[in-house]
Image: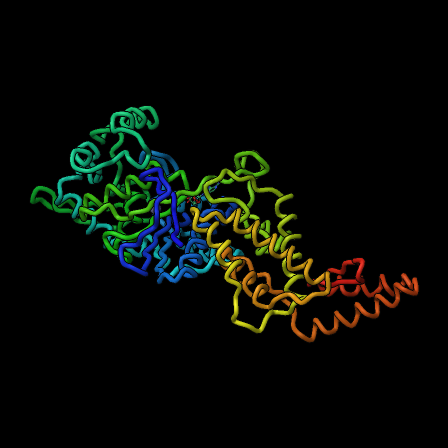
Length: 476
Ligand code: AMP
Ligand code: ZN
């Protein structure tokens, strides 16, 4: 079965064919590290983690790179405004790298709680300044950059004579020019307003993060102390770790313009290759049907949600929608996800974690069909939940659930990043089973005091007790 992915470059679902058979080289744009992970960021990273897990399950050898931006991302469009990291650090009275150290630790804690596997390489922009300076030099040498007052700009007009530029945003060059002129405050240093910075001179600006670069332009050396433009890092780190041409590049739909076209343009300008073949973009998440924003008061960090919900439930809620749909994130959805998790865990608990490597082909095939369709986790997850219900009703009819079927469901949930194996030890489970028997006897004798006492004590230990037609059931 073949995977199809929606490629923004062609606006079509295309059959995925890696450059080298059996190998996938994948880059996704990562976090600008000045604030805690919010649920919108999480949606993007969950989608790319799920893609990686799925590709591996299909037998590909995957190298996944996702960067951390710790310099160069400015607050405004068009190379204006302050560096986001530096601005926040100043507000907090910290060195930018002090803020970054702290935020990186929090970022890994939060992503881990959502079962986002740490990518194979997590490069940081500040660790690649030398490479970025060398890269700018290549763009200068190839004739696609110009210098004004120590700033280096990418010459979009010149570039567009030789390479495609607006295709990702599906716009022609004149349209992009008009839009840039109306979008940003005029920058007199630029030849055209749609040009973008490769390097910005920061001398005398009090900028805390700056490096001295030497560029050779028309046989003269220009020294400039400054910092890289935001788009540069992904061109450089992507090609450094994955090769000039690689398979997949992903990011949020806000990157359809300008971030990704500019990254791609730099790659063409420096190396003659447009970097990735498949460009994937996730749609933005809405919260309770509204755009998420701090001013609307509907802004959620993963950290605060984890106080109320389990990481598995948050992840399950996120994969319950397709990555290209404008899904609504809600408390109702999270509660539903907790219940679904409970159902799935109860099934496994009843069957016991199967001691088998056997799997059921039919379940796998159906799952794969949904996932092959541009990673439709919404349908795949719905199908798995239906299978859980089927297995649960089998056991209610007192028949044996096939361990292979249960095993398959556990494995497939893992591709979605959701762990449905109950987190109880054997002795804990035995104790809970025994207490359930005692409780059922007490209930038969209408001894509500004892029955409630057992339930309350178990709840204190983190067990949920449910009364069903067939007696008491527990779940941890
Ligand atoms: P930022 O922190 O704004 O640089 O965003 C980091 C990543 O999260 C980018 O890939 C964004 O496209 C993505 N992102 C930001 N907000 C949302 C949202 N509401 N829904 C989905 N993805 C988002
Ligand atoms: Zn990027």
